[in-house]
Amino acid sequence: MDLENEIHFMGRPLGQALLQFSQNRDTQMSKFSRRVYEISRDEEKGIDWAWQKGITEFKSHWPIEQEEWSLLAQIGEVLGKTDRASQSSFIKMMVEKFNLQEKKAEEDRKRKEKLYKNLGILGGLAIVLVLI
Amino acid sequence: MQSKNTAINRIITDVIPYLPGRVRLAVSNLDKSILQEVEEIRLRAGKPAMLSLFRRDLFLGETGLVFNNENKSLTLTIDELADMVFKICENSYYAYQDDINKGFITIRGGHRIGLVGTPVIDSGKIINIRDISSLNVRIAREIIGFGDGIVKNIFKNSRDIFNTLIISPPGMGKTTLLRDIIRTVSNGMENIFDGLKVGVVDERGEIAACYRGIPQNDLGCRTDVIHGINKKEGMEILLRSMSPGVISLDELGNPDDVSTVLQVRNAGIRLLATAHGYDVNGLKERRGFRELFYENFFERFIVISANNGFQYEMKVLDGEGNVLCVDCKSRRQPFDPGELNNGGFYIFPKSHRENRVHPGNTIIFNGSGK
Image 1 (spheres, rainbow over the protein chains, first blue to last red):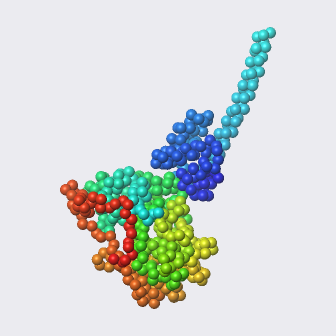
Image 2 (spheres, chains in turn blue, orange):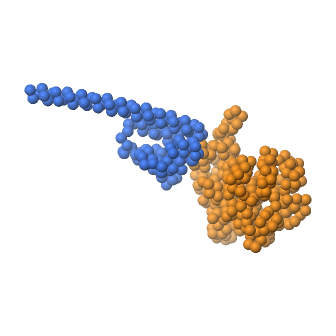
C-alpha cells in the first residue's frame, strides 16, 4: 500500500504510515521512509524535522537534481499538517510533479545521448580525416 | 498491565512527554505528593499554567514549585499550545481531525485532552479548530476494586446480570466504576459469578483507553472493545459481530440511541451503562431516558454522590427504587499545605514527603468499603 493510502484509507499517523510503507517494499523511497521514521522515533522530534534530516543523509546517495530535492523537502513540510483529503491531493500533486521531472530527465538523457552519439560520429570523422 | 501503574507513573509516561518544554520541566520537578493528587493540568494561552487538585487549584511555577496565586507562575503562548496539539496528534492532524473537531483527544493511558479555540465551520459542520487557546489535560485513573463492595448486587445469577445504569455527576468516578464492573463481569468472581462476554462501545476512548488498538486499561478476559465510534453504530456492530452477553457504554442519554438500546434488550443482551445525573428521578423525564423508564428497562441503578466527610457514597437501587446496598469510599483528601519561605508550598512537611509515594505502589481499594 502506498503512502497516500496509508494516510487516506488507513488513517495512520505519519510515523506508523512511513514505517508501514517501508515494510511493504524494498525501494530507495522505502529506505528513506524507514530512516525518517527512525530519526523521528530516536530523536523525539517532529516528522518534518526528521524528514529534512533524512534528506541531508540521503543527498550523497541519490543522483538527483536540486529541483527534485526541493520537491522532496516540500513534502516534508506539508505532510501531517492538513486533513486527510488535503494530504491525499497534495501527495497526488507531488507524484505528478515527480512524474514530470522524470519525463524531463528522460528527455534530457535522450538529448544528451543523441548529442554524445553525434559527438562520437564527429570525433570518428575527425580521426579519419587526420589519418588521411 | 496498566493496573500495576501508579497515578504518578501514568502521568510521567503518558502525559509529560506531550507537554510544552517549560511545563514538562515544571511538572517533572513537582513534588510527588502533589503530582499524585493532580486531576487536571490546565493550559491557557497568555494565562498561567494551572493544576487542578481535589477541591483546589494551584499555579505552576517554572521550577516545579506551586503557588496559590499567579504572580510567579509560568505563562504559555498560543504557539506552545499549537505545538503541543501537533505532538499529541503524532505530527498528523489528519489522523486526529475528527477528535479535534469534537473538542478532545484521548492519548495513551486514557487521559483526555480537551481543547478549545476558534472552530472553522463549513456547511454548518465543524471541520477544524484553529487558534487553540486552552487545553485541559484530564488525568485518567484506573482503580482496581472500586466497585467490589457493590458489584454483587447487579448479578442476577451466576451467569447473568441485571440491566444496570450508573448515575453520577461529572468527576465522581462514574467511568472508573463502570470500568471496574466491566472487568469483574468479564473475569467473573470465584464461586459467585462465571463471567460473561462483554462488548464495550468506547466512543471517547475513556473506558478501555485503546492505544493503537490495544486497551490500556484492564477490562477483563472476555471483553471486546470497539472504540472511536458513536454508541448507536457501535452497539449495532457488536450485536452483529461479537455475540456479547453484555453491552457496556459510557454516558448514555442521546435520544438517537434509544431504539438501539431496545434492540439490544430484544436480542437478550444486558446493558451496563452510565449517565450524568444526581438521582434516578432526575433522569426519568429526560429525553433519551423517558422511553427506557417507560419500558422499565433498567433493573438496577448505582447512584454515586458525595457526602460529608469526603466520601463517595455508592447506592444500589432496584428498578422500583428500593435501596439494596450502600457503600462508602474515602475519596482523595484535601491537603494541608506547608508554606515555604519562598512563597511556594508543599502539601506535606519535607520529612513527611520523603518516600511517601513509592513508584511501585498500585492504587488498589480493598473492596471493604472502608
